Image (cartoon, rainbow, N blue to C red):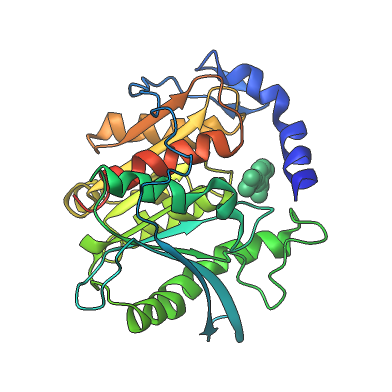
Length: 292
Ligand code: FER
């Protein structure tokens, strides 16, 4: 999996040099001029296990996907003191091109969330980490950049909305409206989150893209109806590393939003690359803002 990210980074390293300057063109890709939102560092230890902090629970589940025609897996994080007599909002948290339903565990979402809850900095939520490659063989093996594999990431729109969400809302004690659903992800999963979240305003009110990849649709496709997006979306939040060649996916959406009066955040992580330093920071911040 490491090697896969490495090849992506290699291909993008030139573009990364350019991203710091902001604006202009690079390799035929327009790099829009944008004003980034203020970066505030996460506190020391936000991603480190603390002995005196209540722990949530991680479990792996299987659900039937009519979209794919198989049984698929997802990792679930339940907050500390999960109580079936209460209802919870749900964050769908999506992985990158070389990952699967276990990839996000590298970013210790359970520890980040446990620590946030200990300080009462996040609304208790269930986090669902699916496999976003909606294919009969959904393993990140072979050529992970092949058109077939990439199409699986597109097809996941239907698996998510028609199969996974109903499964989650049947199995766990959740709210079942857009105001209590969030979708966020890293890289390919960031692109998916922007595409599906903004494409289904009636399903998700909170949308996050961390280092979003070239699967991110053009701003005009993401937000064809400005008024509808402004009305329905409650959070559109992005982060990308200053040294990540994929910044243009986020900055062109940010530029469009600023021009059209759509509330939107884009933080440039200083010296940030295409890795879990940025993605953990993304979760830490997004989780505090969601469901408010
Ligand atoms: C690409 C560069 C990067 C691309 C996808 C990625 C489909 C995804 C990277 C990741 O998920 O880490 O050209 O095209």
